[in-house]
Image (cartoon, rainbow, N blue to C red; front, side, top):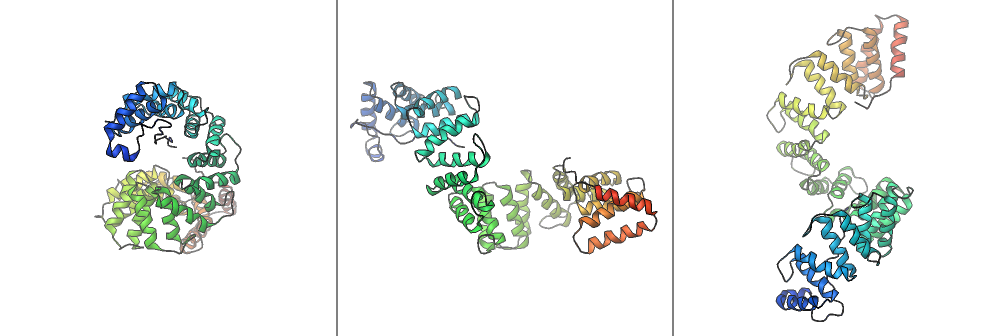
Length: 443
């Protein structure tokens, strides 16, 4: 959440000190001189205006120290705008030592006068626990005061607290109501959150078309997550007519802002030639951007590219490196592939015990390929002591996990082959193991 800063001067009844756009452009020194003369006479409006000019570098050289000096004079005279802006300078350490407690002090003074900007800012301080003990109830109280005055950012904040159950019980209907208020005023965050509400059918009937409508509004304001989600909707034809060109356009906008999902998805579009000219080199470039940020799917995709020489020179060592990065984050598919690399000595020293270790990690998450591979290893005694009961168990489990098809048929054939070498009691034991098995997603 970003601070809402009062950034427009209001000269009130002081006619000679009016830092309007026109006067600041045509007569900056005249405005500065008038404001200074009146400020030195103790007129709070002029003190505020002069502080604003220094804070924003309008009509004078930007000088936060001078901004603090003049805002403080006006704030001590009870000027709410000056109190708010002085709090903002303390919160950001501009012209003064960063001091959240002082920021809270000044925000509170202005908030208690009814200044909506300060009410929102004070809510933020309570929400984040900056300068005060974190207190969602108090955060909600101040957000609601500002929201009731029509502050779009606060309306979004109130919606978020109902959405997450922070300071109030979860209430998706209330969340949707407040998001809509902020979204209708053009607040990008509220538009994105309202889109999510429609996307997931929380507090409103699920409506992908309405979700796409609000994602678009937020995306057009530059919201990278909205751009990513809108790209996905065009990619999948969800809520809009499927359009790969539009999908690639929105993915690209988000990818340039560093969103890893968009970078990975854009890589896939270049790899497949969907909505863009097929280009394996571009696919690799975007996969790498996401992979280097730790995005698991992109790490796995980049590993595959190196393993198969698609868009890069084939390099088993690099392939193993990227598969390992994904595997170390618990990605079951990458764990199984890394096991295969150790099994065959591709890009890593051949080590069948290490292969079994990675297969087991993936198999315990429910990966059918890894379960099948463990069955083979227990059948042949590769990397483990040969154990036909355990081999039967893993083949049986993989047969239950695979969808209908050739892989499942192979698992069944191997299971039945091993069954011929087992007693009925041994088969019953292996089947019970498979029936009682539960995935272990914690590693």
